[in-house]
Amino acid sequence: MNDATTSSTKLSLFAVATGQKIFWTVAPFVVIAAVWQFASQFFPPFLFPSLVDVFARVIDILMTWSKLSSVLTTAMRILGGLAGAFVIGAILGFVMVQSKYADRFLSPVLTFFQGIPALSWVVFAIIWFHGVEFRILFIMIATTLPAFTFQVVGALRSMNKDLLEMVMSFRPGRLKFFTAMVLPAVLPEILTSWKVNLGNASRVVVVAELVGSSGGVGFQLLRQQQLFDMAGALAWTLQLVFFVLLFQRLLSFIEKVAFRYRATSERRL
Amino acid sequence: MRKPESVMPQDTPFETESKAEIVFRSVTKRFGSLVAVDHLDLEIGQGELVALVGKTGCGKSTMFNMISGLMAPSGGDVRVMGHDPFKEFDWFRGKMAIVFQNDRLLPWRTAVKNVEFGLEMLDISKAERRRIAMAWLDQLGLSGHEDDYPHALSGGMRQRVSIARAFATNAELLLCDEPFSALDEITSKRLRAEFASLVRKNSKTAVFITHSINEAFDIGDRIVVLKRPAEIAHDLRISPETTDAEKAEITTMIHESLSK
Ligand SMILES: Nc1ncnc2c1ncn2[C@@H]1O[C@H](COP(=O)(O)OP(=O)(O)OP(=O)(O)O)[C@@H](O)[C@H]1O
Ligand SMILES: [Mg+2]
Image (tube, rainbow over all chains, first blue to last red; front, side):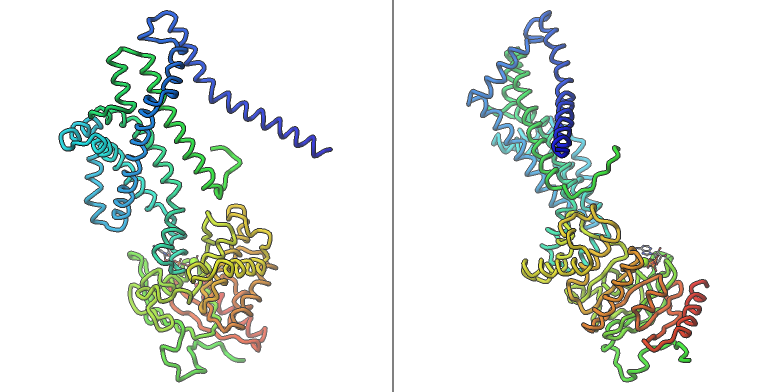
């Protein structure tokens, strides 16, 4: 009986906590939406379209295959670019950690690359390459590679030396050393770097899609601009935002499962 | 009384150098301008149980790092089982096990998976690994905590997991850096006794660092007292026949050289 009461209090506490969480996630957006909707009463639709229209367009995109495929194409381009940049960045990162000369040579080059705007890569890609997909992949990789590389280098360098030596004292083979020590040690920082680069990549991809692509969110946005269609522009933008949120969620979920070994303090930061 | 002598294998006069398990010949280790180990000569024979005693910072852990091949000496020669531990690093797979000064458990592995770690390097089957690891955890009083992550264990429990990890590999050379320091007196006493009997029963060679002279008496056949930088101050043999009076005298002597 006592148990039942405590568990029901626990349940209601849990409900309150979840309710609060939802409230604080949703509230800011509700406020912004309300302000927008209010403005739409006084301005023409090409400036502030009604959110009802925007919502209808969002649904339309999701329900129409030809439009939805644009969203999926862009999503694939983001993920493809990130995957490519990550693989190359991981290799470069390993080389840089192992060789002082590689580090000295590559660090300034990558820093230099970081200073080049995405739009410049677009121009280079158009001049250098032909295929649209290849151009986009090139732009995506060129813009996210430096950050990925530096993050991999940072993760490898910050591996705990005590643990590293402990593992080495058992004389593992290369593969075992990598899977049992390096991978789990760097995984947290790798996941964080994916989260950061996802944001960057989703902003670059729409620019990259201006290289002559006939599909994708960037292409659709350009069309909305030509049509002066604000509701459409918003609806397409939201698709990209949704994708980023969804993927971030997935990464957070992986984090939660993979790092359940972590100690948490009962005190907040 | 049998005066504690400064000795090397006096009872085996014909022992050749290769027969000794660990040989330090004029070993020096520098960290920049700091000399941590200074022209150290030391031999430890197969089956010996040696306690290393010395002031904090005198270079004991550094000696272990050179024995285990994690560090190269700056000068001189270190030989373990006739091989160079730094250059022939992989040759020692499965031949030595280390209990580090801090527990060094992998935070992403549960207690039992941490204990299994060394066994994984030796290509022991999964079932066998689990069986050995469980037996060691049980022996160290950790049954029920097999599936806990290190963060959920107390300091002494973590230390015991790291002892289990080292002992589970059944290596012939054991290096233990203050293995029982994080434990209460009673647990520590029990584990010392088990440690000593384990080493003797399986005729392993073991070197352990300790700050406790009692602990050195409890388990050691031999006590090596180091000065700073690591250089031998005393090299003493003890046996079950060593009387309390002799022990008291030795203790005074160690205290004296440690307070210099
Ligand atoms: N990696 C390193 N880099 C620089 N100096 C070091 C390094 N390791 C040890 N030292 C120095 O070498 C000396 C000996 O250190 P060591 O860890 O061997 O001492 P110890 O005898 O184990 O001491 P304790 O009993 O406190 O553990 C110390 O002065 C320490 O500062
Ligand atoms: Mg030490």
